Image 1 (tube, one colour):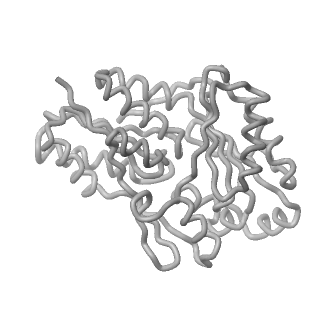
Image 2: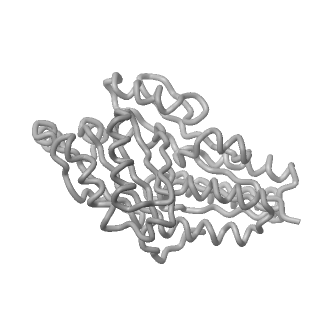
Image 3: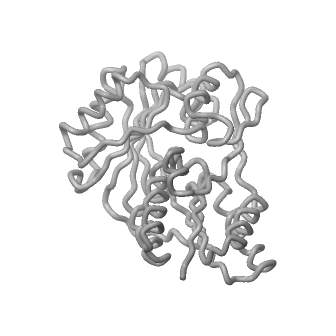
Length: 296
């Protein structure tokens, strides 16, 4: 009989209540900010981290999860009698964590054998683009679904997941080197809020909303270009330190324009907001299914 263990890296942003309910193991990414090193999910809440981001003058950094930490998790799973371990990592183009998982799997097989199957997924996504599949994988496991059934569901979820993301300030994109100082200065002066579309493991700036009044309409317009079968899905509204009234407004526009089954609101964690800044909104949804390989 199969016994399946589920591991995810902390950038998945799966909320603590789901982690505790389903017994998901979260390997936290180390974030260094203001001279302190904190482990995402375990040492700091998203809300406290947003406050740190607003006051720290330096550029925070993140460190990928090491093969040694993966091996420790694999060994615990094997010793508890697991026949399968599923590992979910952030987009491999954005972090070396996925490759570290593959290295750890090979080393583990050499040392302990292959009787526990280890699958390492490159989810090709960020935050709850893959965190929602992690939750569903744990749900399916707990009702007795097989490893193969769960893996197939995950690949379908990853292949449809897309995001429309908006940042209110260009300061953190400048600090992280994603835009140059002149562009940031001009953008701030004009009140520009970049709108980005995330799909196929790529992030593209597709529009620049001018001023706060255009934040919601710009995001909704971009969402309308990509969302499929809206009435059948739960749309996720992820956010940083954004006024509740603005989130209420965007949620209302999502319902008014697309009538989804539900809108679920969750905070963005440190790994994402390290790069975007604390004042960020992301809408995660199902779009057109694409062909891709998620397993190595």
